[in-house]
Image (cartoon, rainbow, N blue to C red; front, top):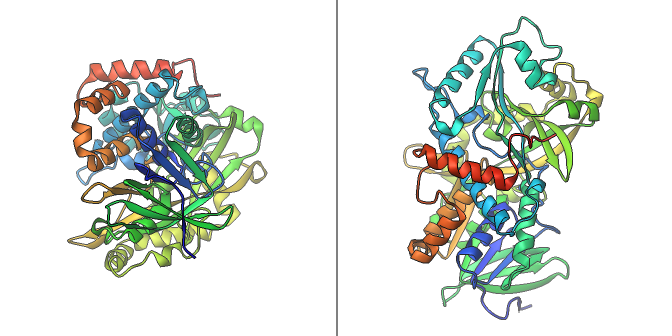
Length: 504
């Protein structure tokens, strides 16, 4: 049966997936060019229900303040802080854009999506405490990390994180760093706020329970999308001038179906997650920090253990984990066939090569899947020595799909992070990958806009608007300490992140 048309006209932009990436790109484009027409397709019943949801891992507000995997120790013993600096700047670019949206009344009540809470790194043992001290000394050289405190004083640590120090062996060597200016970000709430604003604008339509099944390039150079209306079962089509595949793990299969040569050779390795969620209100109230430790050997970045205070839907919560796992689904509500169906002749070599190079990751994931409740409790007790089984409940978190790409020397590599893939003519783009994606969404989408709208982004009107939305645009927060302090003070004020506004 022939498909019926979904749109009587061809929209300028189609966004596939209603998560933080699509929402960010949509609102950026509408600010830059208000007359653009945009359609958003989401296969689920609501907005931000997969990776952007606060229960599905995207909730920390990664700023490299406490995540030790962003500051590796090199063979010569020096600490490489280059990635941490880059991520921190990107997060502060996101904060500037959110501040603009709040100031212009595009977003209301910033406390619903962002709150201030200390970010801490915590380690134990001689080698790890020496590493943390060196890390602190290295980061002190950058104004981006001004105010970071380091301590090995047990009384001080007990004040910072009482649950973590209570019941700990007094002979154990421990250390921690603390950034009081850290934040907790609810990306689900942020996404829903942005999409609600977009829906109120002319030229924007949001289609929930609409799954994009396929797409191809038409003779008129537009993209035809074949869409299933899950409510009625009706198959429809729409044509778009520009398509963004921002459906998390669902982006890779659609990128492959697009047939663009730039997408050849890409694969994806799915990693699932689980949390231990605290159910004891007294314990939840006693902890007010995001406390990150060191990852196990072979663990993916999303599995760095942490004891995490979050505010979700107005209620304070406490999580520990995440524990990694493996399923062949690319989305939490996806299909077990996602992974095998994504293996194609053009990515078989990269995926095989990446698998052979990451045997330690495979062993780690098998160990995580086979963990008993007692083993998970023992892991928790490294952060909460007095933890009891009855105070914690196991919850399933979201899916992440790590990027596998071609490599001229190794055949293929498993890449942690995100990757923007755009066609040569800029008519279609996809975002693959995971952490720290949500926190750096604005920088990632600006990169995508530069790839896909190269002439427009250079124009005076777009440059002026970008400067209005992101005051540091075109300048370096890393290089300019005065600029950094000015925009940071502004975003703290607008977003309600002053010193007295600590979560809890």
